[in-house]
Length: 400
Image (cartoon, helix red, strand yellow):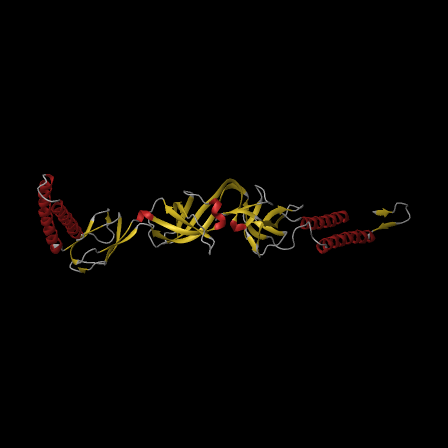
């Protein structure tokens, strides 16, 4: 077989023909390698990233309810809290309640020996009866003008004095029975049977658990938003962050000048396991919005005094990247932030894995398989290699 040039000025036969074919193949392979090397050395702005994509978790921007919350901490205290004091001096004789017992107002808690007081009462009653009879006799005579007005007035004064002495003796006798001044629960008892009780000694402590409140101090700038009966929540870490419904019971009419705060008393709707002395976190719901744009708080990153979120986008080649977007909050609660601008419903933001991310960093979602399709540059290199292999194979077949 002979190869001719177009103008028939030369021809090639035999081994020379093979040399020319292999020279052409080597030239084509060299060109492909050069193009591949050039593609790797060129700056890569739109092709696949040179670094490995960061593995992240994405979350979608949605709409929903958000509340403006004011958080404070406070110990619980009971507004109805009294110490029962001894009002007379006698040995204790009969103990009727123990710590933890619930009592009604006026219920007898303790009886003291009352021999002396009962004797005084009986004597005062006798004197009162004697004075009454004498007063009635003198009044009858006075009405008939048989005694002077002076004698009648003296009998009247004696009767009134006897009445007062009887009331005093009766009151002292009643003091030998120690009664509950309020309805509540006995939380302390400091006396036992046989103890000598002295005047003014604290004997019992009674607390009405239903009167438990949390007293917090609110900065004065929130005064326009404070209203009686507004929603509140009490959270106890002791009870596993259990939430109890509350309400604003009272708002002080004055501002504490030094601290610039307002005293707010928060009541509890259902006591449950709450007890006086427990520390709770108090949340005042100052405002609520039903259709707010919501960004998860866990997606927020902080840089000095500014907050950012990484929003996912795809470049011209479909590569997922993360762009840092400034978040200016207009409202926030424990789980979400409502931004003023820069985000729309459906936007995907990095919720986890944003540590170390920079603007335009390539990312890969947790659910995306790691062995995906080849990048554009890798696909081009693979095509070049395939072309060279095909040419070499065709040349070899032509020789045969």
